Image 1 (cartoon, rainbow, N blue to C red):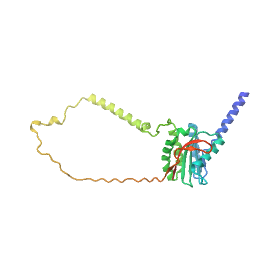
Image 2: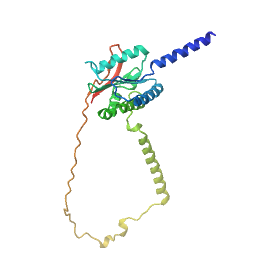
Image 3: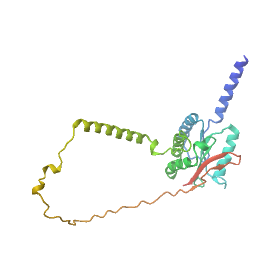
Length: 251
């Protein structure tokens, strides 16, 4: 009977703990539609369970004069104190200041280190510039989730880790093997251009070069239209003493 009661209490505690961290979207600025919030909540919850790391989105129309890093840190301190949350990836969007910041807490501080944060920011910058905030958060979850599968220190965008590269190498190897087999099975062709030349009765009578025309190709050098500047790289520590990796951009 005692064991049964303890089991029930443990199940209730686990359910309560899950309910405390069930919200992932904190759209205080009202940037998302109800449909977008619903879809993103479901996607964030799924990836959070798989990674053991909460994927969170915070939006605001004003930080009340605070730097976005401090605003983000205070929000996370309050949330972590309330829920006991330790591991999180938090994207904060300040629509009033036209800035956004991505931070990794707990195990995400190393699994999504500063370098990987910058790579994620590179991917979501086009979404932010076009006002596609739901797309930016989905891309954040998708890319961060993929990056965190690799050990710290590994470049997740390395060509040697890409599926298409492995496929190309396999095709080249297969082509080389087949080509070698065909070459060896068909024998060698010993006939060359020299076979048809009578060197005793052939000589060069004249050798000349003639300039025919000149072609000039013009190439337009593309301009960098990315107006977003980076800031806050290298992470830091919240007022509550929680360390994080991070980086930010303006848009």
